Length: 367
Length: 215
Image (cartoon, rainbow over all chains, first blue to last red; front, side, top):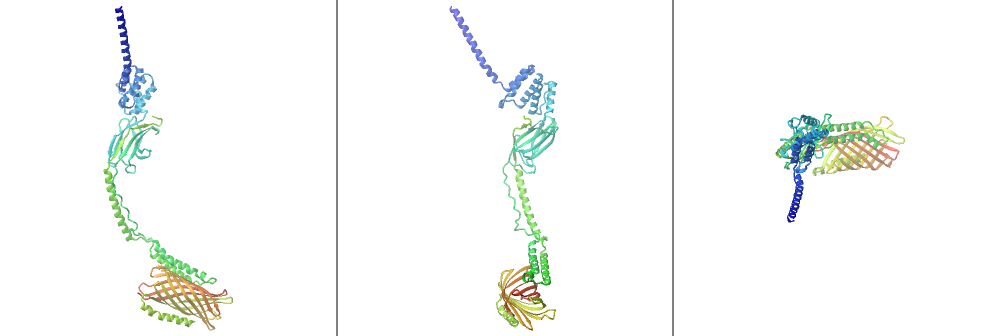
């Protein structure tokens, strides 16, 4: 009886222990799955693809791409996940899905090319077709650098998915174009360097602020396909420049031509007196026929007034005054040029700091 | 009347230089002119036109803003018709002026004119106020001038009656650069009235040569 009882007790204990172990295993199982990284999931997805378990591979690869933030795949790993996912969808006969994934890969990294030893020709051909039909550009620029405006150049390297036309401009945050940087074709086999010397289209330094390099991809009909915006932040220390000398004051300048004022003041008395003599009989002795002899006197006075007017040579250049003014203006110009030169030297010595942000692709139909 | 005016002007011309010489601030200018004069006499029943030459002497003394000007002239005017009696003409003025602005002078004083015929003399006398303006054509050398006068009190001797009158003179005055001489070409017109029925109009063109001592 005791033996039966102890055996039953042992069985209960064993059952409880098994249940506890199963419970612990059940609890431990999900924790282990949650701890898997995006890279682990990607590796599982790749193994599933290689084992031709395409349905499982598709799920794992999508899971690996779904990680966000700091847990997300690095760009190179994300590209690897996308090409495996595209191949997986291709072999699952989901051609549209494969094409969409391939396009996503092209936009992520236009330089990506599938390994022809890993993927079959059908998958490579699918990707190449999508790449050629998806003109896109990515930009690589120094994250933080400084240049001497007008002397150095800030370089932005562009890579394209396919040969197409682009136009590149530097603009303000509000969209106003500060300077055109490039307009023309870009190939898919090599890079294109955009350079900016820190100046606007008028040759002046751009003020501090936020700008963006906008690279617009165009299709064969020159319609905008998408635009890459590379934000830039420009800052430069204040420069202690010299004030420009003021031009010579008017009080120092002499008239360069004879004024009409004195000439007219000389003409006026003669002309007015001549007119007065003509009309005086009407004023003083009305109802009398005045003799015409007064016109002799009036004409003489008027002619004298005209002679006085001409004697002032109104409007004639005064060479002495012009030379005097020229000396003053030349002195001022030399002083101004000297100050401009010194200020330009100071400005050249100031470096412009340029920091670039994360590029953003904008497409008319949405990302 | 002619004789009286002659005496007054001669006395003034003879007496003024003495005190002027004593006071350096006085400036004296003398001049003599000749010119043609046309006299028109009109009344309800009369219309005469006479012309002739008149010669005038003048003296002008200036001290600061004040000016004393004396003029006296004589001449003879005749008509082309034998039915119109010729006249001797004597005219004179003694004016005191004040230079309110360099270009503006105000005058005041008597202005007289006498016509002498075989039938007797007829004298016109006006107390006049004048405004004279000058403008430089060539400063210090050549200037134009206009002078307007209005008689605010006038009398005529034959027939004895009150009279009204006004006139104007305008022209050109030249001063030589390095010589104490000056010249003037002027046109003068004036008219005296007795009521509404009688008026005497005088037009003259004169050429004056003057002397002003250089300081």
